[in-house]
Image (cartoon, rainbow, N blue to C red; front, side, top):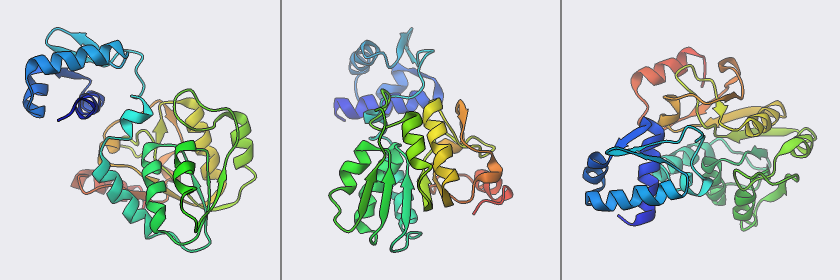
Length: 248
């Protein structure tokens, strides 16, 4: 396992569990404890974790790891989600997408989709879709976020409010056990709210880990979740809770 893969594994595990030991990291990744110590030192220097005796914890201020790190997480699950989402697309649809790493994976998957009119605030997704000649593309303007490669703010939301879309596809930071989609960043949550308001149908992409934790800024109440696509690792209890909310 190369250094970037180890770093991604460590940060992903910390997001799930908040604390990791050097021993379990070494065992899980099949490397020496000294290698893990060097990885933790590098990640601490980047401000992504705090070293404690025998391991590491997330810093108190940590919201999410950087976009580039998250884009390497759970790639198989993201591919499964986007394949399922493709089946819901019809030729000529106007599609709104946000700027998460799962929707970046969706942008790659759109190479297999029929001709669409795609509107997004994601600079990363727009760069991918621009290489797919069957689609028309609109990149929402506005200030570029310091947290991720996307436009944000009131100017971006004003632009979205002038769109009438057939479908909004978005992926929240978390959904929680009560299926309440939320984001770590307030501005991102507000932009997601605007997407939902301007779309006839809503499609939520959330891998099963997002069903197990909450985030800070709610996007919409559970009653407004129309359709959720998750992965095969969701438990029977989690799926039952989703169905109990009346979500398709």
